[in-house]
Length: 478
Image (cartoon, rainbow, N blue to C red; front, top):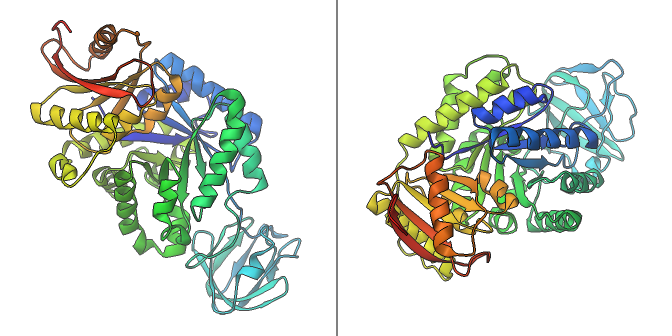
């Protein structure tokens, strides 16, 4: 069955063999995430080559997303590997401490003392430990434990409400962008951006690094800082999409605030013609169990019903016992949720104006296919823009985007309700349209007598040139 919502999965030790990865792709994997927080450049390069090889075997393109680590704001190491913090007891975070003990621990982000003042609240280890800042003396942050527990090496630190000044792009990230471009990454996910400037800088670095390889990756902003929320529209405007990164975001703004923020972010992204990925702990129990919990099923389904382009797996596919089964379960949930999704196309088009011809054709194709009950929309596209605009509205009519460009095909692998297919388009319009229908029929997506809505640009081969809409029945002479 045609599945509209795309699946992004992280590959790691549990999924870095050709056999497992091929099964994951056949189970429904659309985009592979390389997590640059772990592994070497050679590790990522080998995995990228494996993705391309497995995708060829599966007979379709699978995109690669390079996810940058971002600033590491963590405690250092302990001489005994960990300590136990008791409520009401003092504990010191010391930027100059080499090896921690029961009284203090070092910091890998040495500027943290300058960012804090008495009364601030620090959340460690994903919020499981809470410290109240009592005073800051030089390199030392003196705290009192509010919520205690075991604290081990390299656990993360967040300030409640955000406000830490660590830059989004570190020296490691800049080097990792160069690595990502050398291995042909289609998307770059930027961790902890605070504003449009962070995303513009990342895009500039990626475009420069990608120029020798002819690559201009799509830029994804991971929304995980509290200060990114008021800047959300400017971040959207400077990005190709966003990721609702619910882990760090929940620690900074509070768990209870995240569901409403998720809905708002998805809505804003779609209204801005941008992509949106929903991530973090979506199928967490399947790291160890062969089936998801009912709460996880509801979580994935609600993201689909909210209109997310993609749902993402992290540790479930990177280190879990059941990476293939997790993707199969996620795909089944998406399909079931999509069946019940309501189309509001007519309402979407009220009070909208279209100033571009190609965008007007895209919207006209959606409207026509929806009201005529067409079996499919087939878009001949160079850059994928026509397919992107169509994918911002839900119609239950599958969109097939045919392009001669592998880069466009991979980019469209994240577009909701869009199935990208390869077509070496002819310079003759009618020949190209006939070939497009033949491809869609050969893949089993349409059959003789089905109504299909086609969009194409004349002259052929010009990005942004879509200017023609055609309605045909399969089997008729074009």
